Amino acid sequence: MSVIWWLHALLLLLEGVACFVILPIRSGHDIVGHGARSNALPLNYQNEKIHLSSANSAIRKRNGLNEGSEKNKGARITLVGSGPGDPDLLTVAAYRIISDPEILCIADRLVSEEILNLVRGELRVVRKAPGCQEQGQDEIFNWVKEGVRKKKHVVRLKIGDPFVFGRGGEEVLKFREMGVEPKVIPGVSAAFSAPLLANIPVTHRGVSNQVVMCTGYGRNNTSPDLIQYHKEQTVVFLMAVGRLRKLSFNLCHMAKYPKDTPVAVVEKAGCPEQRTLVGTLHTIADLAEEHQIKPPSTIIVGEVVNVLHAEEKTFPVHDVVQHALYQSSPVE
Image 1 (cartoon, rainbow, N blue to C red):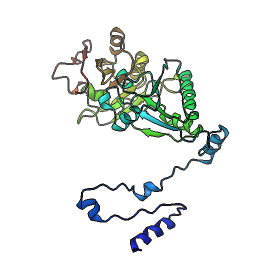
Image 2: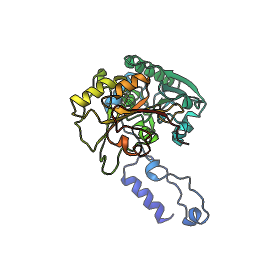
Image 3: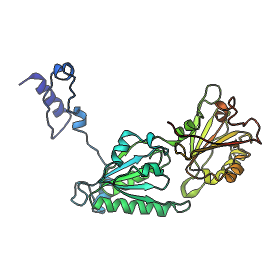
Protein backbone atom coordinates (compact mmCIF):
# COMPACT_ATOMS: atom_id res chain seq x y z
CA MET A 1 0.00 0.00 0.00
CA SER A 2 1.46 3.38 -0.98
CA VAL A 3 2.89 5.88 1.46
CA ILE A 4 0.62 8.60 0.03
CA TRP A 5 -2.44 6.50 0.91
CA TRP A 6 -1.31 6.21 4.52
CA LEU A 7 -0.58 9.95 4.71
CA HIS A 8 -4.14 10.75 3.65
CA ALA A 9 -5.52 8.39 6.27
CA LEU A 10 -3.30 9.87 8.99
CA LEU A 11 -4.30 13.45 8.14
CA LEU A 12 -7.99 12.60 8.34
CA LEU A 13 -7.52 10.93 11.73
CA LEU A 14 -5.66 13.95 13.06
CA GLU A 15 -8.55 16.20 12.02
CA GLY A 16 -10.87 14.11 14.15
CA VAL A 17 -12.98 12.72 11.34
CA ALA A 18 -14.98 9.77 12.60
CA CYS A 19 -16.25 8.46 9.26
CA PHE A 20 -14.57 9.01 5.95
CA VAL A 21 -14.06 7.58 2.51
CA ILE A 22 -10.55 7.50 1.07
CA LEU A 23 -10.49 8.14 -2.63
CA PRO A 24 -7.92 6.46 -4.87
CA ILE A 25 -5.07 8.71 -5.93
CA ARG A 26 -5.09 9.54 -9.63
CA SER A 27 -1.79 9.90 -11.36
CA GLY A 28 -0.90 13.23 -12.94
CA HIS A 29 -1.08 11.94 -16.50
CA ASP A 30 -4.60 10.62 -15.91
CA ILE A 31 -5.80 14.19 -15.42
CA VAL A 32 -3.37 16.37 -17.32
CA GLY A 33 -2.04 14.10 -20.04
CA HIS A 34 -5.47 13.06 -21.33
CA GLY A 35 -7.34 16.26 -20.42
CA ALA A 36 -9.79 14.30 -18.28
CA ARG A 37 -11.63 15.79 -15.32
CA SER A 38 -11.56 14.05 -11.98
CA ASN A 39 -14.95 13.40 -10.40
CA ALA A 40 -13.36 13.34 -6.97
CA LEU A 41 -14.13 16.35 -4.80
CA PRO A 42 -11.45 17.92 -2.59
CA LEU A 43 -11.20 16.30 0.81
CA ASN A 44 -12.52 19.38 2.60
CA TYR A 45 -15.70 19.12 0.48
CA GLN A 46 -16.05 15.41 1.15
CA ASN A 47 -16.05 16.03 4.90
CA GLU A 48 -17.94 19.34 4.95
CA LYS A 49 -20.57 19.57 7.66
CA ILE A 50 -22.93 22.34 8.70
CA HIS A 51 -22.83 22.89 12.45
CA LEU A 52 -25.97 24.53 13.82
CA SER A 53 -26.21 25.95 17.31
CA SER A 54 -27.80 23.92 20.08
CA ALA A 55 -30.46 26.62 20.38
CA ASN A 56 -31.50 26.15 16.75
CA SER A 57 -31.46 22.38 17.22
CA ALA A 58 -33.83 22.73 20.16
CA ILE A 59 -36.19 24.92 18.12
CA ARG A 60 -36.24 22.38 15.29
CA LYS A 61 -36.97 19.60 17.73
CA ARG A 62 -39.91 21.53 19.21
CA ASN A 63 -41.36 21.93 15.73
CA GLY A 64 -41.10 18.21 15.06
CA LEU A 65 -38.80 18.95 12.14
CA ASN A 66 -35.38 18.43 13.65
CA GLU A 67 -32.61 17.49 11.25
CA GLY A 68 -32.54 13.83 10.37
CA SER A 69 -36.15 13.13 11.37
CA GLU A 70 -38.46 11.30 9.02
CA LYS A 71 -40.81 14.30 8.92
CA ASN A 72 -38.50 16.43 6.81
CA LYS A 73 -36.13 13.88 5.37
CA GLY A 74 -35.67 14.66 1.68
CA ALA A 75 -36.99 18.22 1.94
CA ARG A 76 -34.82 21.03 0.58
CA ILE A 77 -35.03 24.81 0.55
CA THR A 78 -33.09 27.02 -1.83
CA LEU A 79 -33.10 30.80 -1.47
CA VAL A 80 -32.55 32.22 -4.96
CA GLY A 81 -31.82 35.78 -6.09
CA SER A 82 -33.44 36.55 -9.45
CA GLY A 83 -31.55 39.77 -10.18
CA PRO A 84 -33.16 43.04 -11.30
CA GLY A 85 -35.61 41.51 -13.80
CA ASP A 86 -33.90 40.64 -17.07
CA PRO A 87 -33.72 36.82 -17.52
CA ASP A 88 -30.31 37.28 -19.15
CA LEU A 89 -29.03 38.54 -15.78
CA LEU A 90 -30.01 35.37 -13.92
CA THR A 91 -27.07 33.34 -12.70
CA VAL A 92 -26.61 29.94 -14.31
CA ALA A 93 -27.31 28.31 -10.94
CA ALA A 94 -30.58 30.22 -10.54
CA TYR A 95 -31.73 29.29 -14.05
CA ARG A 96 -30.98 25.60 -13.51
CA ILE A 97 -32.93 25.53 -10.26
CA ILE A 98 -36.08 27.28 -11.49
CA SER A 99 -36.05 25.08 -14.61
CA ASP A 100 -36.60 21.97 -12.48
CA PRO A 101 -40.21 20.76 -12.99
CA GLU A 102 -40.27 19.14 -9.53
CA ILE A 103 -39.84 22.33 -7.46
CA LEU A 104 -42.34 24.34 -5.46
CA CYS A 105 -41.39 27.93 -6.30
CA ILE A 106 -42.55 30.70 -3.96
CA ALA A 107 -41.84 34.08 -5.55
CA ASP A 108 -42.18 37.70 -4.46
CA ARG A 109 -44.65 39.85 -6.40
CA LEU A 110 -41.84 42.10 -7.72
CA VAL A 111 -40.07 39.27 -9.56
CA SER A 112 -40.51 40.06 -13.25
CA GLU A 113 -42.98 38.19 -15.44
CA GLU A 114 -40.14 37.32 -17.81
CA ILE A 115 -38.41 35.38 -15.04
CA LEU A 116 -41.60 33.85 -13.64
CA ASN A 117 -42.29 32.46 -17.12
CA LEU A 118 -39.10 30.41 -16.84
CA VAL A 119 -40.32 28.53 -13.74
CA ARG A 120 -41.27 24.99 -14.73
CA GLY A 121 -42.48 23.66 -11.39
CA GLU A 122 -45.43 24.74 -9.24
CA LEU A 123 -45.43 28.52 -8.86
CA ARG A 124 -46.98 30.55 -6.08
CA VAL A 125 -46.61 34.35 -6.05
CA VAL A 126 -46.88 36.28 -2.79
CA ARG A 127 -48.73 39.57 -3.23
CA LYS A 128 -47.08 41.55 -0.45
CA ALA A 129 -48.67 44.98 -0.81
CA PRO A 130 -47.24 48.05 0.98
CA GLY A 131 -48.41 48.05 4.59
CA CYS A 132 -49.24 44.33 4.51
CA GLN A 133 -45.70 42.94 4.44
CA GLU A 134 -46.02 40.94 7.66
CA GLN A 135 -49.17 39.12 6.52
CA GLY A 136 -47.48 38.31 3.23
CA GLN A 137 -44.38 37.05 5.03
CA ASP A 138 -46.52 34.76 7.19
CA GLU A 139 -48.09 33.35 4.03
CA ILE A 140 -44.62 32.66 2.64
CA PHE A 141 -43.57 30.73 5.72
CA ASN A 142 -46.81 28.71 5.74
CA TRP A 143 -46.25 27.71 2.11
CA VAL A 144 -42.63 26.81 2.79
CA LYS A 145 -43.58 24.71 5.80
CA GLU A 146 -46.20 22.93 3.68
CA GLY A 147 -43.57 22.12 1.05
CA VAL A 148 -41.09 20.90 3.67
CA ARG A 149 -43.63 18.54 5.19
CA LYS A 150 -44.35 17.16 1.71
CA LYS A 151 -40.58 16.59 1.30
CA LYS A 152 -40.41 18.87 -1.71
CA HIS A 153 -37.62 21.06 -3.02
CA VAL A 154 -38.90 24.52 -2.07
CA VAL A 155 -37.40 27.40 -4.03
CA ARG A 156 -37.81 30.82 -2.45
CA LEU A 157 -37.39 33.21 -5.41
CA LYS A 158 -36.56 36.81 -4.52
CA ILE A 159 -35.85 39.92 -6.56
CA GLY A 160 -32.25 41.17 -6.67
CA ASP A 161 -29.96 39.54 -4.13
CA PRO A 162 -31.62 37.81 -1.15
CA PHE A 163 -29.20 39.30 1.37
CA VAL A 164 -29.40 42.94 0.23
CA PHE A 165 -32.50 44.42 1.91
CA GLY A 166 -34.40 41.27 0.99
CA ARG A 167 -35.04 39.72 4.41
CA GLY A 168 -32.84 36.84 3.31
CA GLY A 169 -31.15 36.45 6.67
CA GLU A 170 -34.49 36.49 8.49
CA GLU A 171 -35.83 33.80 6.19
CA VAL A 172 -32.77 31.60 6.71
CA LEU A 173 -33.32 31.74 10.47
CA LYS A 174 -36.99 30.83 10.00
CA PHE A 175 -36.12 27.92 7.70
CA ARG A 176 -33.73 26.60 10.33
CA GLU A 177 -36.63 26.59 12.78
CA MET A 178 -38.38 24.33 10.27
CA GLY A 179 -35.43 21.97 10.42
CA VAL A 180 -33.84 22.73 7.06
CA GLU A 181 -30.57 24.52 6.37
CA PRO A 182 -31.23 26.37 3.08
CA LYS A 183 -28.85 26.76 0.21
CA VAL A 184 -28.44 30.38 -0.92
CA ILE A 185 -27.91 31.37 -4.56
CA PRO A 186 -26.73 35.00 -4.91
CA GLY A 187 -28.43 37.34 -7.35
CA VAL A 188 -27.40 40.51 -9.14
CA SER A 189 -28.47 43.31 -6.80
CA ALA A 190 -30.38 46.26 -8.22
CA ALA A 191 -28.24 48.50 -6.01
CA PHE A 192 -25.48 48.24 -8.62
CA SER A 193 -27.16 46.82 -11.71
CA ALA A 194 -29.98 49.40 -11.95
CA PRO A 195 -27.61 52.40 -12.13
CA LEU A 196 -25.46 50.52 -14.65
CA LEU A 197 -28.48 49.72 -16.83
CA ALA A 198 -29.37 53.42 -16.75
CA ASN A 199 -25.80 54.35 -17.76
CA ILE A 200 -25.01 55.84 -14.35
CA PRO A 201 -21.70 54.82 -12.71
CA VAL A 202 -22.00 54.70 -8.93
CA THR A 203 -18.34 55.72 -8.61
CA HIS A 204 -16.31 58.04 -10.83
CA ARG A 205 -12.90 59.54 -10.24
CA GLY A 206 -13.18 63.12 -9.04
CA VAL A 207 -16.95 62.82 -8.63
CA SER A 208 -17.74 59.99 -6.20
CA ASN A 209 -15.34 57.88 -4.18
CA GLN A 210 -17.86 56.16 -1.92
CA VAL A 211 -21.22 54.41 -2.24
CA VAL A 212 -23.87 54.02 0.45
CA MET A 213 -26.77 51.58 0.14
CA CYS A 214 -29.96 52.35 2.05
CA THR A 215 -33.51 51.10 2.30
CA GLY A 216 -36.49 53.41 2.28
CA TYR A 217 -38.21 51.50 5.07
CA GLY A 218 -36.83 50.63 8.47
CA ARG A 219 -38.32 48.10 10.86
CA ASN A 220 -42.07 48.60 11.40
CA ASN A 221 -42.15 50.96 8.39
CA THR A 222 -40.04 53.62 10.11
CA SER A 223 -37.70 55.92 8.20
CA PRO A 224 -34.05 54.85 8.49
CA ASP A 225 -31.34 57.21 9.67
CA LEU A 226 -29.63 59.03 6.81
CA ILE A 227 -25.92 59.56 6.37
CA GLN A 228 -24.86 63.19 6.19
CA TYR A 229 -24.12 64.89 2.88
CA HIS A 230 -20.73 64.53 1.26
CA LYS A 231 -20.17 65.92 -2.21
CA GLU A 232 -18.15 62.91 -3.43
CA GLN A 233 -20.69 60.35 -2.29
CA THR A 234 -23.35 58.30 -4.07
CA VAL A 235 -26.39 57.04 -2.17
CA VAL A 236 -28.49 54.24 -3.64
CA PHE A 237 -31.93 53.63 -2.16
CA LEU A 238 -33.86 50.39 -2.59
CA MET A 239 -37.58 50.01 -1.89
CA ALA A 240 -37.99 53.74 -1.33
CA VAL A 241 -40.00 55.09 -4.26
CA GLY A 242 -43.23 54.90 -2.22
CA ARG A 243 -41.94 57.57 0.14
CA LEU A 244 -39.82 59.57 -2.28
CA ARG A 245 -41.22 62.93 -1.19
CA LYS A 246 -40.47 62.34 2.47
CA LEU A 247 -37.06 60.94 1.61
CA SER A 248 -36.17 64.02 -0.46
CA PHE A 249 -37.30 66.31 2.36
CA ASN A 250 -35.26 64.41 4.95
CA LEU A 251 -32.15 64.42 2.77
CA CYS A 252 -32.34 68.20 2.40
CA HIS A 253 -33.37 69.13 5.95
CA MET A 254 -31.81 66.40 8.08
CA ALA A 255 -28.80 65.22 6.05
CA LYS A 256 -27.96 68.71 4.68
CA TYR A 257 -28.12 67.83 0.98
CA PRO A 258 -28.37 70.77 -1.44
CA LYS A 259 -31.78 70.93 -3.10
CA ASP A 260 -30.19 70.86 -6.54
CA THR A 261 -28.46 67.51 -5.92
CA PRO A 262 -29.11 65.30 -9.00
CA VAL A 263 -31.40 62.30 -8.52
CA ALA A 264 -32.27 59.44 -10.86
CA VAL A 265 -35.05 56.89 -10.43
CA VAL A 266 -34.71 53.68 -12.45
CA GLU A 267 -38.00 51.81 -12.76
CA LYS A 268 -38.08 48.08 -13.63
CA ALA A 269 -34.36 47.91 -14.35
CA GLY A 270 -33.46 45.41 -17.05
CA CYS A 271 -37.06 44.82 -18.14
CA PRO A 272 -38.51 45.90 -21.49
CA GLU A 273 -40.52 48.58 -19.66
CA GLN A 274 -37.43 50.10 -17.99
CA ARG A 275 -37.73 53.88 -17.53
CA THR A 276 -35.27 56.34 -16.02
CA LEU A 277 -36.48 59.59 -14.52
CA VAL A 278 -34.02 62.34 -13.65
CA GLY A 279 -34.43 65.49 -11.63
CA THR A 280 -33.13 66.97 -8.38
CA LEU A 281 -34.06 66.58 -4.75
CA HIS A 282 -36.25 69.62 -5.24
CA THR A 283 -38.17 68.25 -8.24
CA ILE A 284 -37.95 64.46 -8.24
CA ALA A 285 -41.03 63.70 -6.10
CA ASP A 286 -43.32 65.79 -8.32
CA LEU A 287 -41.83 64.22 -11.44
CA ALA A 288 -42.31 60.71 -10.08
CA GLU A 289 -45.98 61.41 -9.39
CA GLU A 290 -46.44 63.02 -12.80
CA HIS A 291 -44.99 60.00 -14.60
CA GLN A 292 -46.53 57.45 -12.19
CA ILE A 293 -43.27 55.74 -11.28
CA LYS A 294 -43.95 52.40 -9.54
CA PRO A 295 -41.94 49.72 -7.72
CA PRO A 296 -39.58 48.08 -8.28
CA SER A 297 -37.50 51.23 -8.61
CA THR A 298 -33.99 52.18 -7.59
CA ILE A 299 -33.09 55.73 -6.54
CA ILE A 300 -29.60 57.13 -7.13
CA VAL A 301 -28.63 60.39 -5.40
CA GLY A 302 -25.42 62.24 -6.21
CA GLU A 303 -23.35 64.00 -8.86
CA VAL A 304 -22.68 60.69 -10.68
CA VAL A 305 -26.13 61.03 -12.25
CA ASN A 306 -24.66 63.70 -14.55
CA VAL A 307 -21.38 62.02 -15.48
CA LEU A 308 -22.26 60.11 -18.67
CA HIS A 309 -25.27 62.09 -19.79
CA ALA A 310 -24.30 65.75 -19.51
CA GLU A 311 -22.44 65.81 -22.84
CA GLU A 312 -25.07 63.71 -24.63
CA LYS A 313 -27.84 66.06 -23.40
CA THR A 314 -29.84 62.92 -22.64
CA PHE A 315 -30.49 64.23 -19.14
CA PRO A 316 -30.46 68.06 -19.12
CA VAL A 317 -30.11 68.18 -15.33
CA HIS A 318 -27.88 71.26 -15.35
CA ASP A 319 -31.08 73.29 -15.11
CA VAL A 320 -32.98 72.22 -11.99
CA VAL A 321 -36.31 72.97 -13.64
CA GLN A 322 -35.69 70.74 -16.62
CA HIS A 323 -36.00 66.97 -16.55
CA ALA A 324 -36.00 64.06 -18.95
CA LEU A 325 -37.86 60.80 -19.00
CA TYR A 326 -36.62 58.25 -21.43
CA GLN A 327 -37.33 54.62 -22.14
CA SER A 328 -34.24 52.49 -22.43
CA SER A 329 -33.67 48.96 -23.59
CA PRO A 330 -32.30 46.21 -21.35
CA VAL A 331 -28.87 44.80 -22.00
CA GLU A 332 -28.76 43.11 -25.38
